[in-house]
Image 1: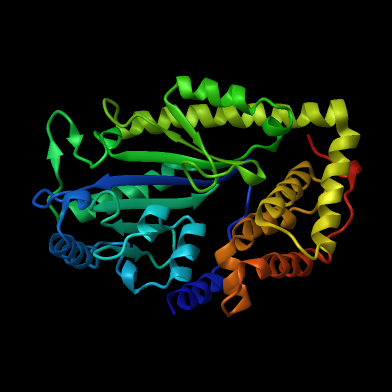
Image 2: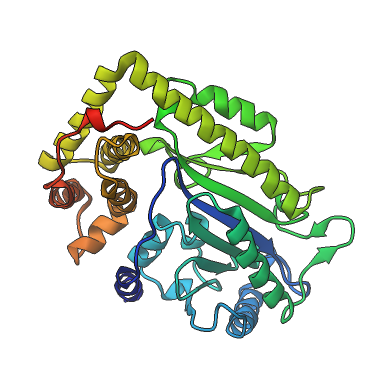
Length: 358
């Protein structure tokens, strides 16, 4: 099974150290082939021709030599769900029935979707807030692919895309951010309204229309036309650093003004995760958010921030079924999720408020 191969290789890799507030950085480039209609207008035979052409070209691109390539219709429903939960493919691609594919780099930090909304969606992910290294990799991949494939490009409009909002650079830069301070202080709506005025979008964990459980938000640029890639990154990066400052201020104010209540919430989260027997993914996300916050404050060892980051993904429905190793009825997932969390948090210590760091 595809997910068996994926999970066994991923476990062998060392997990990167997590940091406060920013979980990960991503850059996605939308590209299309000049000689074919966009996927939404293409016949199945044309989509398959694009798939074959792209798969062949990508196999020779530096950085993708040892990549894993697979057609979407060869994946099981669980395989697709796992990849969506890991943020490697979009929910839209997971629903495509034929003529689409995935190319995944050996380190699993680069994933190229073929025949989603556009012929190619090149995306690179890294932990933390680091657009510099992410853009360097994405740009190198884009250049390598363009040497083998003729892109649809217009001198005035830039890269041509299926959706007009992606015209120009075709770039969507984003960061996944953990913002419990702004949520609990009821300032998140103000931040969203302010950044929207700057052409910045705020979405949930799995993109547009998804929930914001765990106080996790995906923040990205909206404008792709009329700005260079560097300008987009600089503007977004400046906004994100400002959000980090506001989040840290909100956390400190909560601790100063109502520290007893905040510490009680974080302590109860530890207790609930150690003792739960039934838990929904949304509740698990909210408790894990408090665990991460406690670790950021220094009240829990730093390893629990890394554990929370991993469990944000592993409590999702597909991963719960994967850990069970067999098909699981929806009604049984809450029991299995609780069992998984009890096992991971059974040795978690009590909070140490005296260890709080500013």
